[in-house]
Length: 257
Image (cartoon, rainbow, N blue to C red):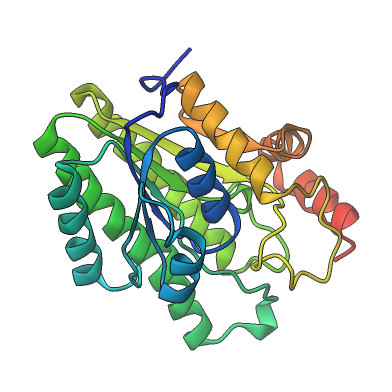
């Protein structure tokens, strides 16, 4: 059953990808441009955006730091002024640092939460407000399967992504009756600059281009949750339902931690 209006034809759609300088965001923006969309691309590093999209007439480069609320609002205003509105907003910017409990520090906790939760929530809220005024739109929040349950080395990252899954669920309940689509994207392991520092096996690792294709397939199906690769996410979905004793035992066996 489709929980959102399916998006199958991207020609002429106005899309904003926040977090488009590397990894999945870069691959998604490129794929959507090839499919005929107009794509605004945002990230902190202007030079990476300019290198990737500077020669595309259908791309609109809008550098920003997602923790800067004023910068997000200004970028959205510039997009609306240039294109007259926004059809799809993808909030993907985030940070990740593998940490065990004894490695936690106030600075790392604050930095992760400010980017992955505060920044992502604020960007989503501004986009949702625009959609309510416009009367249509789709908001896609990129979270992670790390938000399903507690995992080793994800003591801050996992909770930040769990918050965004819950946030997306709440937004769908409020916005869907008003004709606005909301989806949450929960990738497994994808080869990106954020995962290159992992010193543990990453089962079912996929490339960013495949992740982008999976996202687009989920939008076409009208899914609320878009998760991939299925061979991995199905296992984690099953683990979500185990009682704590069995869950902890399974995770320790799988990770060796």
